[in-house]
Image (cartoon, rainbow, N blue to C red):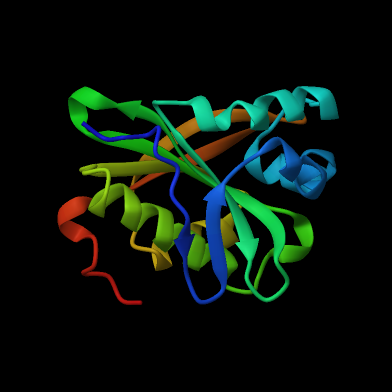
Length: 184
């Protein structure tokens, strides 16, 4: 049985993943305020700071998901979050999501953070399958997921209604037997 109550610190060359806290909200506010981040993640909801403080303050108590802050090592700045959620105990699987503040993209931070949390999911939590959905208008994220070992499985047609237009989502996954066999 995976232990999701244990919130690890995972260290790479570029980033450190550590438990999210309420104190991370000011650094993460741009995620919720930036129109392009909201579009790329398909986020319709608007969150205010008190609601975000309550949410992030409760992450350490969750026994069915892992929410980690992505900290850029060079600056010590919180630049995003990486999450394993929607745990399916019967099938030893989770969903994965990751998001960064707008000025932290395109520097390899996401690729490394993805490898760290996915590796933890397989090697420490004993997961068999980790999956995600990526919208058709986010090819940069899809390339990053492929680079980290995710494979496209299919398309959820018209999965998102964004500003009056239907957008497809590609379902992607990586399986434990495949982990570590993908190029770095």
